[in-house]
Image 1 (cartoon, rainbow, N blue to C red):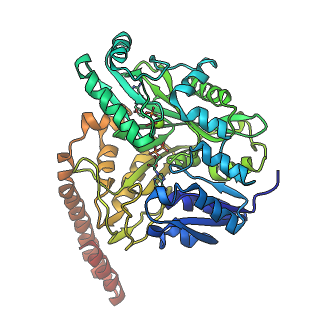
Image 2 (cartoon, rainbow, N blue to C red):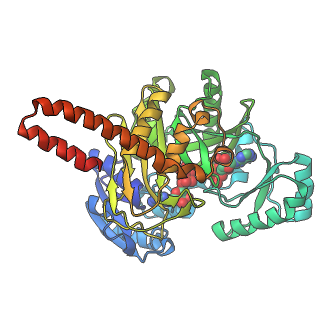
Length: 497
Ligand code: ADP
Ligand code: ADP
Ligand code: MG
């Protein structure tokens, strides 16, 4: 296949920038598409060319397939990268791109379609001996029949949307008398979010930990995994903190789950980047949940521990190249943690809090990576996902990575909107997190908004300590000080006050 020369990125925000950076390093030109709300956005400024594709609502812009294809034709892009979210898991979009003679940087439309349905995916992987959560294998609409099945599976059960994603259309039912109400809610949520109300029932796995494997395939039939990520810290079934490796996997379990993940990919004749999600119970039994057929939000933690650039690999695979390594060549180094910095108020039920970033100063330093799409003074548009940034810390060990992340959180200065930073600090300082003794119910079990109320006090104490230290060094310095040293001290004082 011929080399890609120009990539249109059909996305916005941090992930659009992330993709363009790798493209630029490879000498590939980049095209941004943007909505009227994103005229000033960083991905638009970073790209070699940019095309406005419509008004602010996603349905009219970032989900507008004809407009995106038109932008590709106009600019002569020979490949399209869909990022995550938006059209990234839309089979019709992938097909339409290929029909235009443009390379789709992702898996085949048939892989997308198979894995896009959780039920179809479960059927396909079962034949490959991958363990599944006990549950129904067909969609169910009749509440009476559904309740019978739930009783057979045994409570608690989870009602899930087959077309689900982003934690939507999912309901836990603890007892039979709650079933009807929860089923109704799941169906209406699924219909609203995915235009498809079909639901199915799964056993609710107790003490569930979310462990997923990054897999990579090429068009020559090679498939490898790039180890796991643990994403058990969630709110509303959505991830907020991710890490690699997981603190609970033994090398043996890692190998077994890695092999199962590769089998899942084989069942879909998969190529490109993909993520196989598993749930792990308290006895370390693992079960297949779903496969995401795209680059994942949390892919940076895998990049940090493997040293690989996943976007570059996606582009190489899309050009028809073979994977440049085999399973035994891939090794893990140290530990990486990512936190998602959302414009949400953790003191108020994580409600989105959009507005202007009146202060925005990123943390820096050894082992710190910030993937974002904002600068100080920018507005966070109401039309899209309220994620401001991903903050990633990489260090030699898990405790060092936690210390580094806490240092970086303290350095991050954001005012104008509430963010999930104080919540993430709370989690990283919590003994259950530190000791690796947590599951997806962490927030429910350990977090109360009141716990954040004490934060300013703690900070005050820290600042007071810093001031005391400064005062001490100041008095020492004054003994030998030249006039210039005083100016330095004054600057320090100004900054701390
Ligand atoms: P994961 O990648 O781990 O599955 P999510 O399910 O949270 O994590 O990520 C996909 C979600 O990201 C989408 O459902 C959508 O809500 C959101 N999203 C889509 N596009 C963007 C974007 N450009 N910037 C931020 N968030 C986005
Ligand atoms: P989505 O498409 O919304 O990402 P998933 O099937 O990946 O849906 O599930 C999202 C989250 O819901 C998981 O990370 C996990 O926390 C929880 N979950 C899903 N299935 C189960 C289950 N059977 N038992 C317990 N928790 C589950
Ligand atoms: Mg999922």
